[in-house]
Length: 318
Image (cartoon, rainbow, N blue to C red; front, side):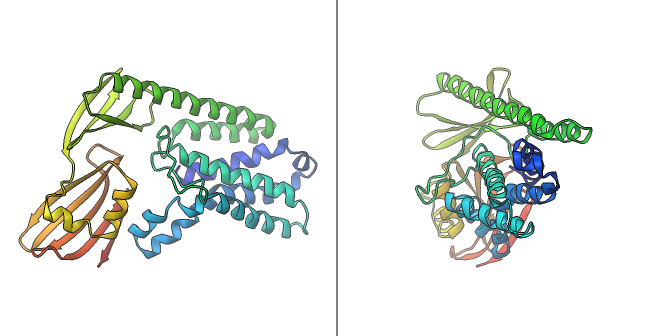
């Protein structure tokens, strides 16, 4: 999920903590608890520091080791220990429990996105992604805003956020059921040899659709109980020497290992070529996916790379 969701979730978990007898008896701990839940709710994204090594390095490392089982525990221990020290060495168990919960909720939310996480490292390096929540979900955000408002006007925060988190769990379950239903429907209506991936949007009844065939992709949208196809893109061919040369770039190699939805577009220039690699899962609009631009000279030597994710662009000489 996006940072704003993780922050407001930390606030919500701070409110929920008042179901804990320790917090009921020591409401003065709220500031320390906010430190634990808000920082804990954002802690797995400490891998943002990789941005300083380049955008391609960041994308390779994001939601990997920092979201692993070991990292979840270590992050919670570190944050809870700081809060404990600030409170005279007391209440460690309480701080650790709520910090760990905040870290785990962060990881679970991320698993629900299309990018997913390596949440179960070191047991497995597999990426887990359920493809059921958009990066920013207005419903989840709105529930937290309502909960905070009720808390501010005097309602018991523990009771308020118990109800809100039950509602969020039911909402995610509903999205999962709808996802499976839409996937089943598109599969039943599918052409021979096609496999389908759904991309979540803000709306429950609206999904992006990627159909993968042997040599091409079809992109479309599911709405009003049917798929409207908008574009056909060819898969990158191993027979093309320009494509083969661009694959030598480490980030393209990473994309090939990490995604099965890649499209490459060759642009000719007087002094060489640009190969634009798209990960079709990332679409704010159908024409604006995740992209890596690999520049080659006429002899197919690598000159420059430019990796873009969302609005981020970090040119890098190679």
